[in-house]
Length: 364
Length: 116
Image (cartoon, rainbow over the protein chains, first blue to last red):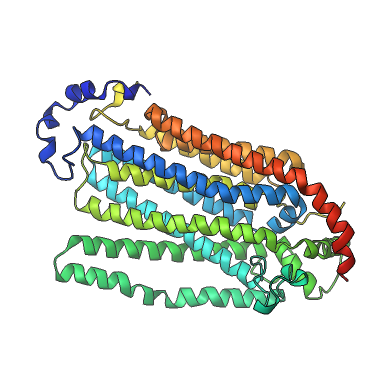
């Protein structure tokens, strides 16, 4: 607020050493009066971009609000398929990456190259970890056939009333566990193939003595490591919650649903009640909820990927010592973008994961 | 306002204490909101969860995004965007709320007869 007062006078007082020759330094754009003007122009542009992002996401939030207002029971029911501990883990990971990003901005402002590189690397790793957990979640849901509305409809049936709300075939829990772990196992077994890309980058970097190529290669390795750790952590968490999987005693609502379809051995009063509820809800189609879930988290995940690319770019430049106390704009702008991505997740998490998610809601 | 910590004349540098305490508050609120989920009546739950999310969002915007030290123009634009989002959601909800009863009436009259 007060920082906006008389920027020019302030510059003259504070930046006496860099004052005269600022225009001759690297990355100083000649059409700006001074470093501050260049920084503020970029920041204004970034804020305008962030505002379009907020409005962009608000369309999806609006869809959420309208559908939830009209079908609250669908949301309450379908949200039980989401694991709030995985969502919580992702929230913590993103908040931590926000902290390291804010710290990276601080390091850039103070001209600490080492700190900046460390903080950006941690941020990149956390972003990848987030994607890893999301990989697990999407795989799990895909095998439970929890997809968007119409995902299991034949092309020729599209538009027919009876088909719009068709529920995918639910696999029995033991098959489902197997298939899910197999899918994830493919990633865990063959991830080395993906490492070829960063290794080629690093190889080129050494060959042509280009540090940026090498840095980009290492950044990609960090990302791959983060994704793998994310998948491993979520499998660990999944096994912890389900007692090694398949025992069914601590199964979440999602597994309950799967069990109901696969002839449960003993039906308690609770299970029968859940069965009734599911019958009721198949008409109301949880896939309505999952359409919104995939759109919102998918768009958010896309923003995470874009952020990772931007952070890799920052890392390359940080290693090249491009940033200095009177030129750290790019770090600040990417930081702002990263915090908006975090901010959107902060709202997505309670809206999608935390709707009465303590066990199945029984009919009244 | 930011004179006490200025290293280079423009843009405020956040101190580690502020960053770490904001982080601590965010994590505490996350744990709180996960712990509260499912333990409150449905209508209260949404309000509580969204209030916690709003406080967390404010912390992120004010401190991590340096908004308390930002230019008034940037703050004004951001607040305006949120105001327009509120208008957007508000009007959309009011609108669907208006015609929802007639949709339900129509469904009861026509569609349920068709489905077996």
